[in-house]
Structure formats: structure tokens, C-alpha cells
Length: 455
Image (cartoon, rainbow, N blue to C red; front, side, top):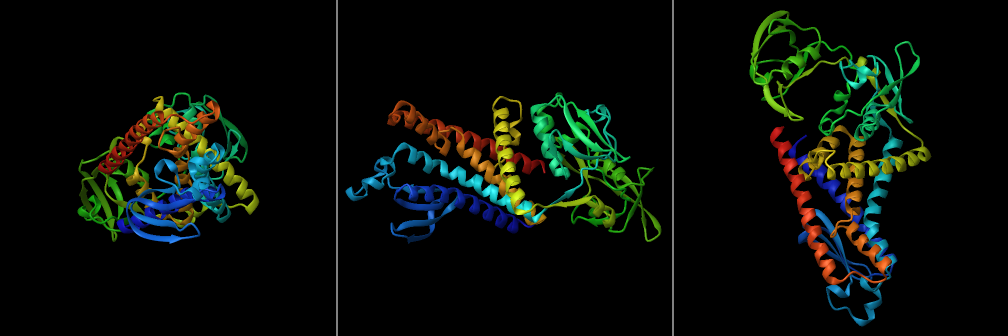
């Protein structure tokens, strides 16, 4: 994925989410009879402007595309003509103001439902949840999981792919559930139940591949140690490895499976490895020094090679799940609700210290995910857009002054006490909100930079 295409995928994602969010505010404001002065995508210097509609609303695309806003007629922000007083935002009943502000996050949730709906109708491809080798002394080992079993249900949730299984297990891992019932089809074709104890999961276990901490992995067909591709300017390329080479041994130890080669390379960052290569029916000896990289806080080795995979064997492990329009819509609503609740749970656990703040992502990581999901295809990109739309909706509903949720909090207070908060209280709230928001942004950008450096 090129830098340019990553930027395009990010800008398209950001533009769609911002337009939907702000259009929610705009539409409900119009329904409530409020005059809209400006609809802006982005902040700062306007790049494109166009006046349109009976109210001559100014439609703007601005220089900094990290957000947007809808500017409404308001006596607190300037003089209002007598004939327009009834269309001023501040003159509207508190219920109307509440609806206008809430409409932005609600629009993001509706967008997520639409995206998931389309996604579930198109069909979701994934790996069948067939269990691979079980790591010893792990919750999966204690639960007596066996390689080759297929997971069909976790708790009350049926699962069809490893993506489904990963998501449901993650929600249980976050809660540190002590008794998760997992139904599997064993190798004899019988449905049996396993009981996973996830009470020992630590917050650090959730930062990386938590399935490995549980002891589970996806089943992989036996892959011979034959190189199919060599990444340019990688350790393998510099050492002279070529597509078609078969790795016979590593440091004198015979290898028959690709996974064996991978494990030796991963555990040898910066350490020279003597490879015995079979090339064109001749044996060649090559020394390679794995590049050092960091994965989940651990230094590992990589040499930039990919395996030759038997497509027929791989196809047997793939599945595509799709639904008719009605069931797809129900599933989309359920998925959006489920993801929203989980996002709130994760935020709360970050606040109380049960989950690391390393999980907070900023624009650099989001742009990277946008590019990677777009490269993987339409289904992955739609799923990414839905997830980000939910995150944006949840974030904006947090009771932080300056966000939509902060304004909603003010309106709830106004409804309870019968009058608006004082100007002074509102100003203090804005200052606190700005401080909290900038702190959150600092965490996100710091995490982005850390990930960038470590990768």
C-alpha cells in the first residue's frame, strides 16, 4: 500500500464520517427551525466556499480536515435581526437544543448500522475457527482444547469465523470471566463443551495478541519451508535469498515446516543464522542476519520472506457468511450496539487503570488502518469505517465540555434546575473540556509515534 493510497483511504474515511456527523446536526437544526449560517468540513482557512439554499447557508471545505462544525444563528455569538430571533438556536426550547446536539453522534451510529448492513448482505469472508496447536499451561490447555476442533459457539454467541471468535473472546477477556463455555466440534464430529477461565488475564495481555495468552491459535495447513516471495531491501533480500528456495536447515537443525523457520527467525533478532538452501536441486549455504523489530513490546527478528501456500488447502479453511436484507439489518443494529457498549467499557477500564492507555489511537494509526483495510478489499474497509464511526459517536457523547456530550450534560442540568448554567460555569467547563481533550490527543499522538518508531 503506497503512502498516497493510504492518504486517499484516510481522507475518504474522515470526510464521510465528518459529513455524516455534521449533517445530523444540520438536518435536525433545520427541522427545529434554526437558521444555519455555515456548514464546514474541516477547520481553519476555507479552501472552497459555496452559498446555497433559502437561508444562503455557507458550505465550506477548510484547510484542516480533522473535524467540522455547523454554525447556527445564536444571540450569544453576535447580533441577530429582529425578524430572525425566533430562528436563533439559543431561543429554542431545551428539548430542541438537546435533539440538535445529539443528532451528530446519532448520525454516526446510523452510518455504522448502514455500513454493517451492507457488509452483512455482501458477505464476510474469514478463516473457519479451527483450533491450532494449544500452548501448554494456558487457559485453553487447562480447558482441554485440542488441535483440529472447530469452535461453533462461545457463551450464547454462535461464531462462524475466527474474527467472530476473537471478538467474543475479547469481550470476555476484558471482563475476566471465570467460566466461559465454548462449544466445539471435536475431531470425531461430536459437539462438546469446554470451559475457559479468563480470570487471570492481565491488562497487558490485551495489548497484543491476547489469543496467544489464552493459548489458542488458528489452525494452519502444513506449509513446507519454500520461499514464495522476498521483500525488497529486507534481510533476506540482502543475504541473497530467492523465490523458490527451500530452507533445508537453520543452524544445522533440519526444518520440514515453515513455522519452524519462522520461530527460529523471530527468536534471533540481530543474530546471524546459517541457512542451508536447496536451489535448483543444489545445496547452497547462506548466512542471514534478521532485522530487529518490536512487536507488542518484544524484540523479534524478521528477514522479509513469505511462504509458498497450497491454495486448495487454504480454501478449505475459508468461509463466507452472508445474510438476507432483514436478518442483516437486525445483525447490523446488534453489532453497532455491541461495539458501542464495548467501546464504553474499554474507556472506563482505561480510566480505572485496568486497561493500558496504549490502546488509544490517533490520526497516524487510523490512517494506517484505513490504508491497510482498503488494500484488503471493500468488506474490510466498510468494517473499518463502521468501527471508526462508532468510536466517533461514543467519543462525542462523553460528558466532556466542548464535546457534544458536554453540551447534552448542560441541557440535562438545565432541565433539572429549570434554568441554564451561568456563563461563568460554562466558561470553566469549556476550559476543563479543552484540557481533557488536549490530554487525550497527546496520549493518542504519543502512542502513534511510539508505534511508528517500534515498527
